[in-house]
Length: 286
Image: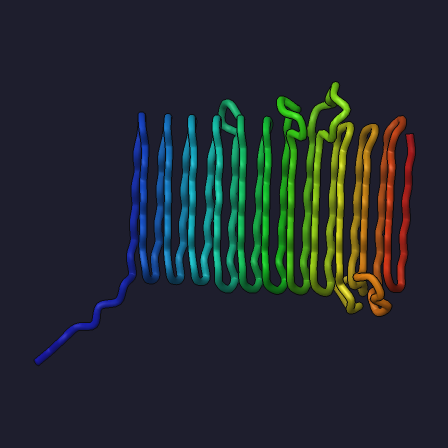
């Protein structure tokens, strides 16, 4: 008697065009999923368990894409004009997530939430114009986050980013740009929290009323540049606020370096709090 062994190696492909689009894909195994939705009320939900790859492309109108993966995953969500949402949750090792929102045509209500848990996670978010919000939470070793936001201040706090990383060798790079606002509220808001050793954060904000907060709690020296915690903040515009806190309270083994560059006519404020062996440089210019 002869038998065969079947392995779950699913591949799913859904392409929809026009009107009330909806696609739901649920796979368990070594899966690959591709969803391509075009115009109007697009909704895509993908849930995969295994060594998964997921790509969701949505075009204009009321996008919502939710991707849930467990395993060594790769996810790309590409959304264009109108009412973007997002959401990617990945759990496993060597996760890679790229979420692109807005560009082709009208760019509106971006929201992106990426949650990755594991080792060697990489996340990239790019949001163009209007009401951008990005939230990234990564837990594991050697996490990387890169966020690029640009807006025209159609909404107060048009660019807003919150990043939380727990583990070792955490890296964060953000770039926020917004046209000068007439309102005395932060045009760009950036909050970065890094827990673990060898943390590095680089923040660039262009526009008035920028607000950035970096908290790093690394306690062991020896990162890529020899520091436990390294933070670089560059703000261009008026009424900018930068706050950097490095090293847990009472930590004496941390080697911290903080660099703040603020350029603008008036109203710039920089606050740096360091625990350990510290280096701080603040430059303010008109």
